[in-house]
Length: 366
Image (cartoon, rainbow, N blue to C red; front, side):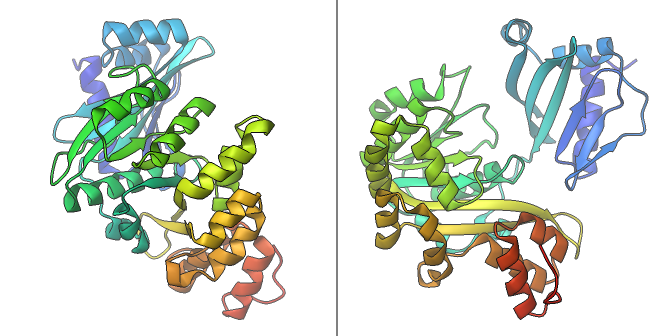
């Protein structure tokens, strides 16, 4: 009879074989997979609360069991040898333990394979500054960040330090040296790690997520003091990203933060992930904002709403709006018009431009 760990491994093999992104395990339900964005119940009997708890406890050491029981939440990474790594979140719901396993392939995709615009390769070579990768949950931010770090690793001799919760993609030293620190295992918090990071002689710093005021402040300071800093936010475009960072601070600090951002911010890369219609799988669409002198002035003056016009006309700097990329994916028949429209930031303008290109009838309304 299979052990709980063997049963869990069999389910995780199914995740990889069926090209799913996530496995959801919930008491009194069969396992559920997310495949190309849709949830699908597996053709299996429902698992009892005891069965599912045994699966979860099979991958937890004593410290993590205690954390799950005391704090009712637990984040960790888990690797199945010769298969893949998984980002795991365990949680209590209605008196039972549930869990989500996010697939993290061992092989890191390149910038070109993901379809990230080429200008981002140049951004990775910058000596200092802040680069933010943004998008909703499940939009591929971690995959893109791994590709950016891998590009630096393959092309420069720098010291890269990542602070992650948990560690997702595992990097091996190539030209660069990489140290990966996990919150809860190697450090107590993002902010605590950043407070000591200057003594570790880094050139490039990856902060897995800018969750709170102190982490944001320390990340901006690190960028100011001559380091290239990458991080993520759950925002959908450049203007919203800058407003979100500024709004975290008290009103009397916001002018200073806008000034600091105006100096340190190098780019905002916003992305969305859409199901393809030409083949199986999903494709990413990107908005790229590069901090030109004009953009920096808008950040300092709090005029982020004016950025979209600079992004639209900033092709020479490698800039593009998300809507422009979405329209190009529709033109290439890679995604449906309806799906692209659902991710657009300006539905009326998107419809108008699509009508000009003959992709939709001019009478169509958002």
